[in-house]
Every structure is written in structure tokens, then in C-alpha cells.
Amino acid sequence: MQEREFNDIVDETLLKVEDAIDESGSDIDYDTIAGILTLEFEDQSKIIINRQVAMLQLWVAARSGGFHLDYQNEQWFCKTQDCNFQELLDRVCSEQAKTAIHLDL
Image 1 (tube, rainbow, N blue to C red):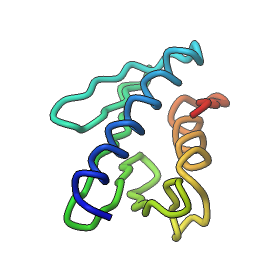
Image 2: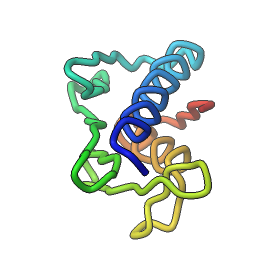
Image 3: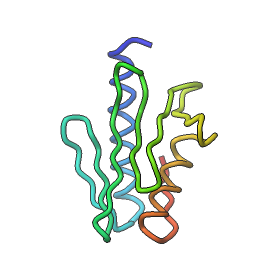
């Protein structure tokens, strides 16, 4: 994958997350600065989603740990957790919100 294609996919992914948060009605604030998406929860905890261009990966930093996702078969996938981005994001958001969260990406 070329760097430009990678960046386009990441940008699209971050926009989908923002839209999904808006549509979910969840009490999650978010802000994107310089391609880094920060999700903030009621207890002031944060989840950071950013790109690692050199590795062609999407990284997620949450209270429960750091996760690296590769783009394969038209989706982001975390090998260490054996789940896709949707599943990972729902899980870490639910943990930090202390309530079930489903973001329809």
C-alpha cells in the first residue's frame, strides 16, 4: 500500500468514528488535531487513535492498553486481540464509559 492510500484510508476511518459517535448519542467528546483523534469520556479518561505511517498501522491507546491494527481485507484488524477495529473500539469505549457502547462504523 502506498502512503497516500494509507493516509486516505485513515482519514476516512477517523471521520467514520466521529460520525458514529454523533449518531450513537453516547456522552463521548472528541477532537481531531493533526490527524490524531482523541475521545474523552465523562471521567476524563481518553482514547487516542492515530496513524503510524512508517508501519502502515492504526494505533489505539486506551486505559486497557495500546493496540496496533493492520489494514487487511478492507478492514483494520488487531492480531494480538484477534478482532477488527469495530470490535476493539466498542470494547475499549464500553470499558471507559462504564456502559455498553456500540459505534456503528
